[in-house]
Length: 356
Image (cartoon, rainbow, N blue to C red):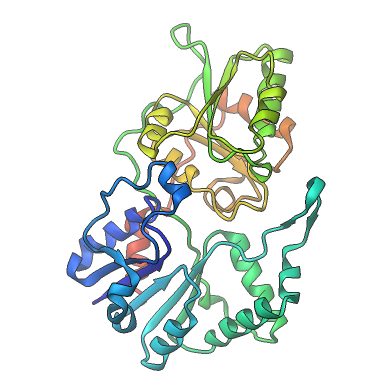
């Protein structure tokens, strides 16, 4: 059995699943094919460490493998590849985050993402993709529940009724730690008087980091709570966030750090918050927090939290009061560990290989 992933970058969030597949079928039968080794922005985050396994290689150098593998799951819209494979009767899966993220306009205005279909090139691309659903060997792997909703909308617009078994829930999959670093299951003790909250990412508008700042300020100033938050990253909203946090010693800012250092920070904190709105197709830092055994909270709009977290750990993007309540419940040990469930690389590998 030969299997390949086609994507645009070697990502640490994709490697757990890739490694789980390699353990089952052998390195000679798997290819992680990328179109560019390390994007400049990702390299600044510490991804460009040169440690990718040998079965990760440029897509151009393994095109024959992609054309003839028993199964290809692709994050790229390589329709020529898809159509060539389907003509041979080979199993092919298209993977994506949501198609219709809200369209951001100046002054915080947003338009519905489905308006993209009004663009002729986007419409033609969508129509070409929808035609693939007619073939037995083609499936769609939506990364998060909104990705499935978006694709169903596209298919309806094209007048195509796609059966539910064509959709296989997908995302980024994790490798759980053998032992969580210290699940937050009780109130602060005299030896550990402060609950430590963490957020990591780009400080841009739709990440809604202001929600975390407002929640922490309110809890510590009005409720006499004992929470600190470390905000790790840079972006055009950083100055605004620093002004919003001014005078609050419990809110700390740290510049972007490599992923290995992010993991170290997670082991030193108790709660991770994914605060993004619906522009966040997934939100892979949540995977890392789950792997490190943190209590995790997230919005019901972001793909990762909507898919992976129980409703009791979710809040609406921008609702800092709801987040404050969840943080207090977590600090009191009322929420407990989040759990990973079936979102493990081993489970995903079995599910993917069963498609062949």
